[in-house]
Length: 611
Image (cartoon, rainbow, N blue to C red; front, side):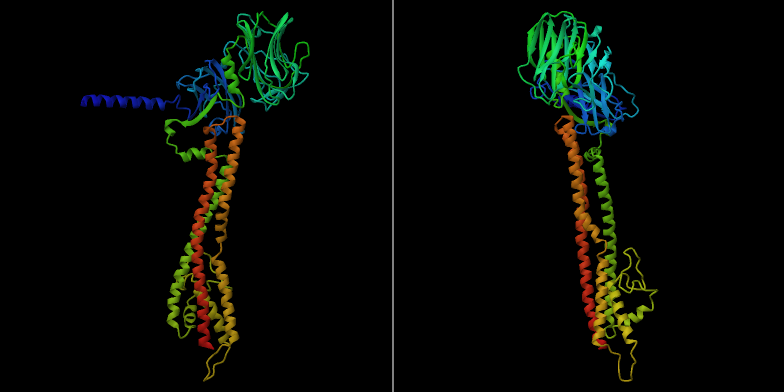
């Protein structure tokens, strides 16, 4: 039994090591980060019942699902896509990468997707500033992809992304830089794009053909041709009549299949025709809209987009992502394209980001700070300055108040020893001073001034006493002393002395309260600044999600957590300042009460002695 337990423990340890090594596998240590991207073909996701192969899938990166544009190269040339085995590089290319706008459109070829599953995944690696560009647009498509227009850059005729380079012979449309996927084109009703005939664009009966694109129109169309392959009366057409799509094959007698459901004007719709295998099928938004039997013959003419060869049947609206395959694609292949490219793309699920093992010790706080946007850093910087300024004020004020209390305690001990002659202390101490430590109005020295060991330091009572006795002695010195008469003060003189002490007391209180207003600003303003940073950060996060068209916890959580950092910073400033302000204000009030009591006591003693 003991031997069995030992063997069993060894097996568990071996499995643990293997599992750990698998979980921590890293394709290449030169890349610091990776992002997991999962494909959901389940009924709750894209609802694809087939297993398409070699599908070019669009990966939309934005602040909503990828907050680390700053960790990648500015042009995205360090991006790499690796298969789920974390070993096999996948072909990909970048349609647009804008680090400043925090948006990217990247196409990756997925070898195979599993029907009805949500376990297929790839890894997006980034974070290697020394990496060379690894994109390969022609390699991203199989041999049957005859033409693919992304309609970029923002100006000029489009370029074919496939290896066949079927470039347009005539380009009469207008480029729209902000279309569904990067750039697209607009047709005003009398414009076409024509692509000359080529061997790769031929419809061969034993292979078939697939034409697909995204369209958006504002009003019903009248027999508008989105795409037409035409050769001497034989034609293959994908078009719109009214608000319904149709596909037509003509070789003498037209064969047409049309959708019975109207498309919504003003919204993007994915249209595709699949000709081959003895049938013509129309697919709208990834769902089969109908199919009819057809006997295909070869068509090897030119391809026209936005109208017909005869200069009619013009399409009015927008078009993006024109794809032509010289084979009849499976329905699940077209579905994968339709459900991964739109603003709502249920096929593609963006997971979390990870760092290689050497950096895996990053805390949640570090990860949150990496997601903090520029506006958030500005708010945090302002709050940091406020925090340290408030700490300096509280520390300096506390030190000064402690000096005042010590000085007052020492002064009262000396003052009460000379009850019979209130002016004795002034006469004995005044000669030792190197100069007044305060001005005639009773202002206190700076809170950072060192104590004078020859006086009572920063004592407010000593200063009140000094001012009061200076006024008293100034009035007494002007009187002559008879043999039987002591120097006396009138009631008016005593009131004048009291007024002087009250004025000095008021100015001392103002000095004691100095700089406390900065603490109230931090208490009241800190949370509001933090709230401002949070609101702006959350607003940017949701705007990025709206642009990306992807809504999931992994997309929302990083940006929201980073936005809340501003609120935490605001509270981190306000709470210490609130406690410090209340404590210091209580100490100031106690000193003020002692000053007030001493003024009454000193005036009373002067009146008893000199009246």
